[in-house]
Amino acid sequence: MTKTILDIYNLLLKHYKNQNWWPADTQFEVIIGAILTQNTSWNNVTKAISNLKKNDLLEPKKLYNTKPEIIEYLIKPSGFYKQKTLKIINFLNFFANYKFNFDLLKNEKNLRDLLLKIKGIGPETADSILLYALNLPYFVVDSYTKRVMFRLGVTKKENIDYASLQTIFHNSLPLDIEIYKEYHALIVEHSKKHCKKIPACNGCPLNLTCVYIKGYRKFYELQ
Image 1 (tube, rainbow, N blue to C red):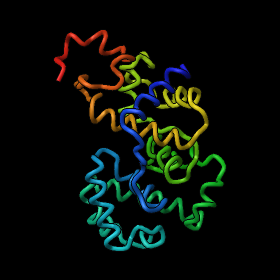
Image 2 (image 1 turned 120 degrees about the vertical axis):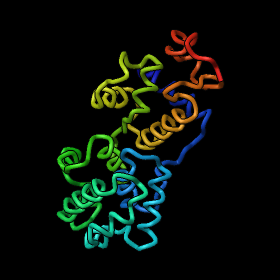
Image 3 (image 1 turned 135 degrees about the vertical axis):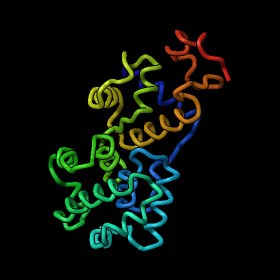
Image 4 (image 1 turned 135 degrees about the horizontal axis):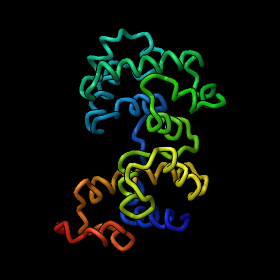
């Protein structure tokens, strides 16, 4: 399994090059982006982030002291803005216990478990915060990851649970935060270009290692 996972990473990296994800100026921007990106496209997130920046609110203390209705208005482009405002407030209330200090937060034992107890923070969002904002070694699993790994034969079912697929990556990769970041970003890029719901297999860099295309290619017309 180790060789397979690493081979996939190397093929994707060779084809797409470094993605340098997550695009953010600060740790806090990463966290807000991780919450806003739930159930929406990144383009919509950037609009909401831009609104917060223009109003000088991408700082924990300032946003903590901002009225919910103002946050709602500014993040509206991201969709589900009322629910996401509540999630942001829930996180800020949690972060306030650490005096908005990222070092204190990072050094908290069982931080992942504590993040998951925050209403509105699920495994993908928690791990995005841990990996991209705090540089802690947690591989981020999303629907793209599940789809790609299923089609490549790494998993036997596409709806594999989050923890099981994350464990495969943790056991198959060197403990390297930069690889974790890059691999996740490459999977997202690959899923947008080729491994879509209806796959666009022509020119895919993983065709030679893909189980899915070998078994189901006759059902799809190469584009």
